[in-house]
Each structure stands twice: as C-alpha cells, then as structure tokens.
Image (cartoon, rainbow, N blue to C red):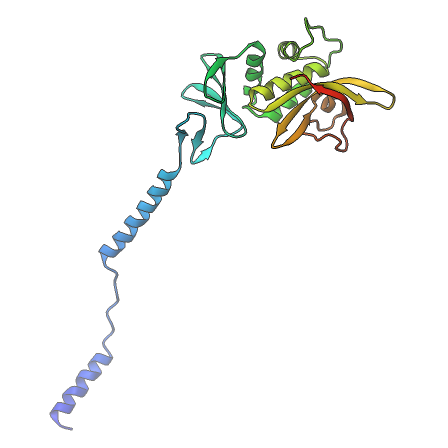
Amino acid sequence: MNRKKLTALMLSTVMAFTPAAPIVASETTVHSVENAEDIAVSSATASKKNGWDSSKKYYYVNGKKVTNVTKTISKVKYHFDVTGKVVYKKVKNVYYKINSKGKAKKMNQVETLAATRLDMYGGNLKKAFNWSASIPYTANVKVAKKTPGNYGIYGFQRQRGDCYVMAATFYWMAKVSGSDAHYVKGYFKKSSGKGAHAWVEIDYKGTTYVYDPNFQKEYKLNGYKLKYGAPKTLKYIDYKRLN
C-alpha cells in the first residue's frame, strides 16, 4: 500500500471513532422562549377584568361577574342580583335601592329591615327564605292595615307571625334582592272546603315559581321554588297578586 492510501485510511479510521459533539441550543434561543411564555402569562392575567365595569352596575373579580351576593367594596356594602347587577347599597348604615338607570334612592322602613335581614345571610335568598319559614307561628296577627308592608314590618321586628307575615318577610327580602317577586293571597284546597293563605311568586325566565314559607314550616316539606301542581305541594286556588 502506498503512502497516500495509508494516510487516507488512517484519517478515515480516526473520524469513524471520534464521538460527535453534542448539539446545544443557543442561550439566546432559550431566553427568547422563556420571555415569550412570560408575555403570554402576563397578557392572560391582564385580560381578566377586575373591579367595576364602565356603567358602574356590575363588578368583576378575576374576570367573573359577581352575582347573587352581598359584597363589601371600599367600605360600602353592595348587593348584586342573579344577573350581577347591583340593586342596593349600604353607606354609613343607610340603605339605598338602585334603579335600572343607576340612580340611588333611600329605602323605606320595611325595605331597610328586609335588606338588613338579607345581609345577615350574605345575600343568599334561600337562607333568607329558611329564616322566614323558621319564625314561631302566631295566629291572629293584628296590624293597622293588612298590607304586605305592615305584615313585613311586624315579622322583621317581632320575628313571629302567621302565613301572611312569613310570606311578607320573604317577599320583601326577595324584592330588595332584585327578584321579580309578588305577594300572593288566596286559598288552598282542604279535604273539606278551603283555607285562607298567603305565599310569594317569583317570575324567572318566563316561569313562575312558588315560595311558601308557612307550608315548609307546617308540613316539614320543601317550600322553596316550587311549581304549581307539583307533587307534595298545596293545591292553590282562588288567588291573586297584590302587587
């Protein structure tokens, strides 16, 4: 074998047994990817809305609208309805109801009592209903005039009453919470004849629901958010809304 061929063979052998150098990503490339991830996270966080919207009617926390709750914001207590709209506020122990245009008006006596009681349950309407259904029963309640307002004041102040009082206390709490609530008087069918009664209706998304605190108390059955004619409920007859 001549010298040229021998030299070529030796070079080929050396190259065959020389390990390949590992491929290392450039430091610049790694930093670029990390920075891109940081920017993406920052953008996602920034996109989550917090605080009041431009109309000052809705409040957001981490991008979610606050709904169906009482919440204190900057020392002012607000109640947000099921849609998230603020419907009343408490400033320095005075309650104000807020209309659809955002204007505030001082609540009257029964509305203030209702809002105060509702706030005790964090704005939770079902817990408020259970309170109305839990007050001791007192027959033959005497009020100056048999109106939902007078019955409500009686119930909130004395924390006892009959079906008219129980229904009135829940009606006012539902009303100030922003629900489309109505006080109803009528009768329920008995095995013989009928009995005078009062309850609450709430219209929601085209459906009317019944809320009957006295029924829940007397029969130990659910009286919250019922439908007329449902099993294990009263047969309501000859009734009408008073408002």
